[in-house]
Image 1 (cartoon, rainbow, N blue to C red):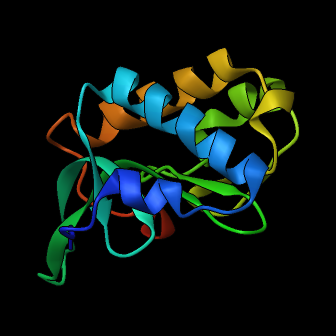
Image 2: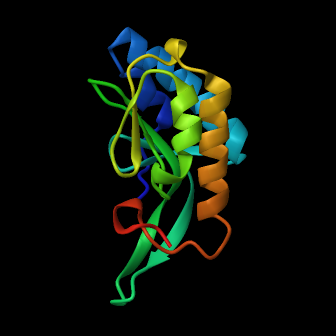
Image 3: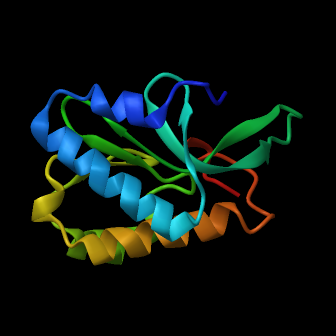
Amino acid sequence: MTSDASVRAFLDGVTHPVRRRDAETLLALMSRVTGEPARMWGPSIVAFGEYHYRYPSGREGDAPAAAFSPRKPAATVYLADGVGAYEAELAALGPHTTGVGCLYLKDLEQLDLAVLERIVAASYAVVTAGDFGGLARDGGA
């Protein structure tokens, strides 16, 4: 589901100043952590690498190994293995909210970016290890 759209053009179109600043920070952080080039995954997600998932039902597909989106209410960081494994790190991160597989971050300047980097690196390592086959909403594995 990658698109031919330019990551740079997408980020340049982010009008909210904090979201745009945070998007640039996340672009650098995720590029550094994953070693992967950024590419668009659909119209609004910036992705780094990918992994293949397969359900017991036989359904399968590909998903970003690490990703973010500068949404209007908050920057969203996608963690394919879910947020549950990172409770201790999240307690030290700073102000955020979570979904099953998402971190919602309103202002990266209020966060400990070293903690965020460790979370992203750990999640990326899990989903690219070769034996991760699910999605966060399904409990990973």
